[in-house]
Length: 394
Image (tube, rainbow, N blue to C red; front, side):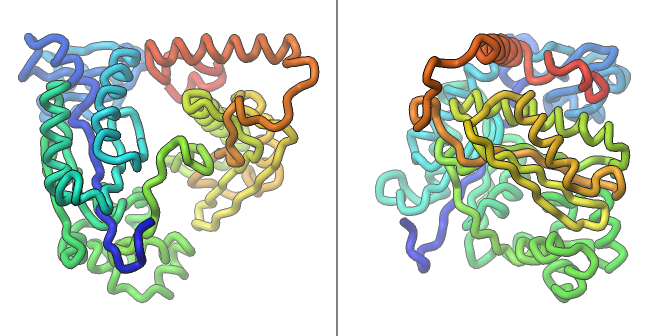
């Protein structure tokens, strides 16, 4: 336990252009060339681009056809997810060798809490340097690091000097570090939020923290209050290892507000599919399904349902989430964000109640199908297969 007077030491680690970097490591002849990893030309998107490719304006989530026009001499490669996960496991083993408090954010990104381990591994900056060197020595890849007293500041810091960067923000210099940054560096600040802040004359973190909280709350609701705290460097969230997570979920902020209920259901299906896949990867299931909805005016609601038995199947999660959707004003009020999560997590061997005669044939078939789908996604990437109604999202 960390005492109230003890300052946290958080490291955020983010691999540099991870997918292309793995490809270049496996194929050294591509070093120094623009490498783009993603889907096919027709409907595919860029998953990741090397820094050489980014100079041409190529970036992740961009349509592959546009990337090919911008970088005509680029090397375009398909996603090799099984290979990336293999390297990712090696990297996370390195992270875990310094502290058990590792919170994965994705296949190539994590928070580490190194508070109190100075006697064993050195000061936080030294630890970050050791991790960077060990990753380079053992994998040939570079990772950028941010060291700070909170998760929020550490994550921003890791992005300041990419690639292969290290930015340290001491606790007494947090405001000095944050103040000049543009507000769009903050999590959750999309185009609409930035425009709302700009109308208030808020363009930097300093502007945001100096703005009266009452004004932000009136304009942006609770989100405005939370943003004010972050602008002051206040973030008390703990680093939570995934195997100790109290819930697993996904949420998405939409580029354009959603009013069509059919589109809303498609988004819920996409979220349920991703949550279920992540739960199966973690080897857990959950009993409580939660649906989070944030309307265009930033009003936020959550609806929940608790099931008699834990689930990890996307179809079951989707069915429950759609029922919860009926208890909202989706379809009558424009929606800017939705999220689906499961809590009351349990591992299969910890289930208190087992079916008397074992799972029925339909359940076994569904389990076999999920296993096959997961194997395809592991090998070819998250977007390689999924419900047919989600084709519009690719």
